[in-house]
Image 1 (cartoon, helix red, strand yellow):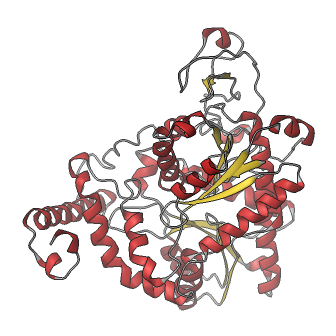
Image 2 (cartoon, helix red, strand yellow; image 1 turned 180 degrees about the vertical axis):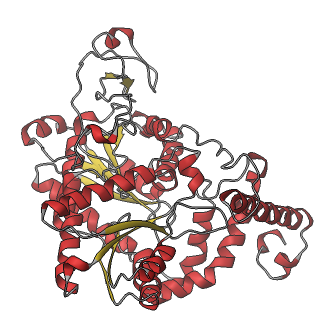
Image 3 (cartoon, one colour; image 1 turned 90 degrees about the horizontal axis):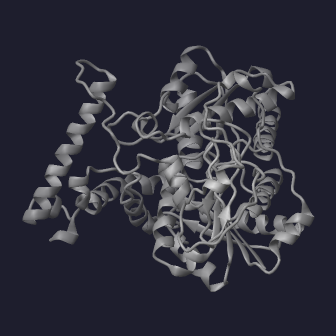
Length: 506
């Protein structure tokens, strides 16, 4: 039986160029001089957890200029049934789909928010204050819970994310089976049930020997795929079974042809269905935001991948003679620090002021409907657009179980199977049509080399309403909160205890 683990990221797998193998007793990356002789300098070789030297994909470490190749869907699906069948053999293959998770009832909202803000990849505290991660998460979750409950109440009393992800897993299983790859597909959520830990228990119980990890985030980010990968890394290190189980990760897949075509299909359908003059509609891509420091200081590839993804979708639409104007903005920012710009709400107001009358919102970083699409876009941003002078509003649905999308995910899994246990170099700079497959630990090193400490986003003081001033205002506010929490925790007194916000420390 084959088990498939889903995770959202890249495209097709490259073929190894060297087949030298030799056994060893250590896990991790080991470079071999004898293998280096048959590979270019810009290629590395990694050992898999099973103890065999694996030849990776060829990925140039030299950055390529964007103009050095035509913009197109870089990854296409070309699976081979015969070779796949031979690879499966007696192995039990699993696919692990990773996603955020969401509260299923209103009572789940506050504990869900606590899990979210207790993640050090969401709120990164200085090393000296990391012991306050829990109390700070408790404070923020209690403070935000009432407003969040209102949002979830407006969409039916809970998030549909689990139901939709379970449906995607089942459709993926069926698609793999139809492609002669019988597999089990698991769902692991980061902040709510079924937790990733629960999925791992089931994977071990089923005796999976080869695992494909597939985050359901098309573009890689430290705060999404990176956080889920880091959790997997900690789980794998503590379990002998998992250490010996071969696995690979598809860290992002926004370049895949099937994904690009599926998004273009949805946009084309909405333009024709909702608007009297489709050619005059502004296509408005709205992506989930991340703090600017993650991109500028920690090297998060999210912004670059998002921009390239939008370009690929628009090129596909142009091939269909759809040449509408378009723009990209970022939503869902929280806290006082600067996030990726332009912000969605500010952009909607500006478009209204410029005389735009028809707007089609495209939730570009979401493959499932949840609070950010059903409430934030459908309610808040729609209301803002109408107030800003936009007369026609439409929204492209999330991909969900769209057949082209599901079939392409299945192809991505099948194409990754020959490389389970091998490492491929990250192609963040090269931007070639190769999938940076590798183990969890190797991918974290490739994608988030500075994850231990986020450098200060600004090194000098500036007066006025500037980027620096906004950053320092955020630091001052965070410092005040930390001082308050230290006082509350050490003394057991204060208005937070009196209000019952920190009952754990009474």
